[in-house]
Image 1 (cartoon, one colour):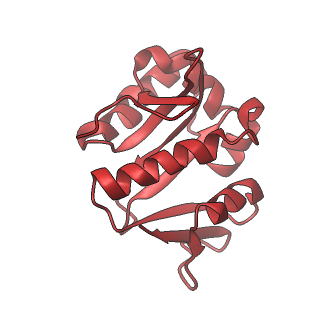
Image 2 (spheres, rainbow, N blue to C red):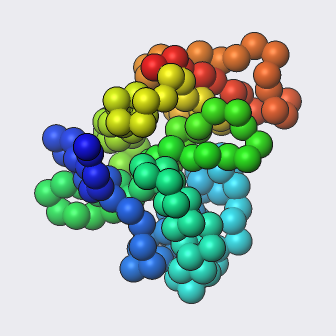
Image 3 (tube, helix red, strand yellow):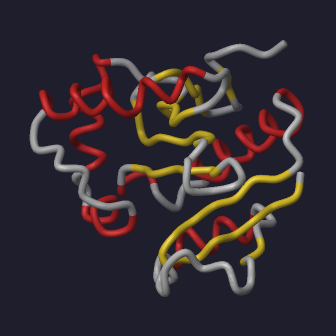
Length: 168
């Protein structure tokens, strides 16, 4: 039975904790995160610690659920988040992720997402995952396409939001 942290060749995925406040403050205030995910009103490391305590860490009540810190295996430097999210508004589990801009386009997002898809299928026994993004988030849509997610026709939660699904 798998447990956290989990690793790939280049990455370690682990639970976030309050010592990640500075990293979360930085990540959640990048232009891409603010635009594509939304402004979570994190303006300081203290705000980030509160957000970690109130929103991110409580997601861990179920095993392997919630956003995990994605770190470079060699240095331990956090570069993004990736994980399985159980949203009240969705019928399936959502694969979510976000990365610091300097680590985009290097294959890390795909590597971490493939690991979480494997966990969903082989450890949690899930039969499908969904992903949601804005229709103009071309990098995200390209990655989801490479991961075999397919847009669900007629199921846009909002006009500019795309809902994609992958059978496992």
